[in-house]
Amino acid sequence: MSDWPQKFLRAFSERHHYDSISADDAGLSLADAYDIQHRYVTLRAEPITGFKAALTALPAQQAMEIQHPIIGALFASGKFDGNEEILPQQQALLETEVGFIVAQSITERVSAESVFSQMASCMPMIEIASPNLATKPNGIDLIATNSASYGYLMGPICPIEQNDLDSLAVSLANGSETLLSGKAGEVLGGQRDALAWLINQVLERGYDIESGHILMTGSIGGMYPAKPGHYTADFDSLGKLTFTIAEH
Image 1: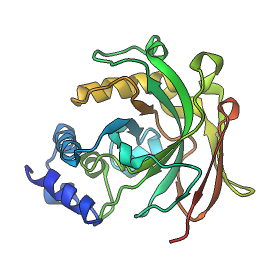
Image 2 (image 1 turned 135 degrees about the horizontal axis):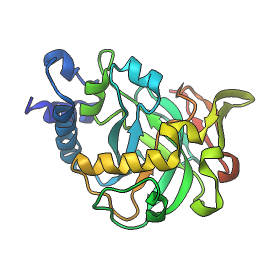
Image 3 (image 1 turned 180 degrees about the horizontal axis):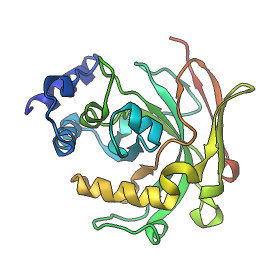
Image 4 (image 1 turned 120 degrees about the vertical axis):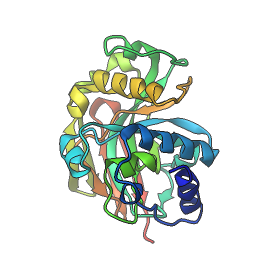
């Protein structure tokens, strides 16, 4: 088990698929998988820009044979600019999410009631997720390989207090075709609960949450393959985010 982080780093550097860790050792625990993730993230030696929640919807958890959401780290290299054509280097999925910017370092567990007071702002976001596993993934494989973290786009920064985040109607369209739609409040029972859960999990897994970090609370309305096209994500009062996935 000790050499898995090095194997994942080599696969990432050489743009290969990750091998399945659970196929090699079916007895790995959740704690084992997060320990491997943490060491892999550290070996990447890249600036961490924040953290993400994944598998926040029950169908996604069932598909990955796990009973709860998971977390992963975001890297500076994963930040894409919506004004440029995006060309993912591996198969990827698009997700609409609400993101938050941390106002100051967080070192202790938070409650849902007070969590918004520790955020500087919020914004619409697109996650470009990519499990990149050689075989059908499961929850343990996803966690160990950093929870399909690949890339993200940020929309306009918005004040939290001026928006009823749970009531936001969110959709993703390619031209006139709507691909995804949902309410922001569907994520883990609401954005406050989702954000508090994410923060507490990040701290529990040994990561630091710093001022300026981005926190993504989970997909709204599902996910869609990152096919070439011109996309518009509508986040209601938070505004819109447009981007293009280029042809290979």
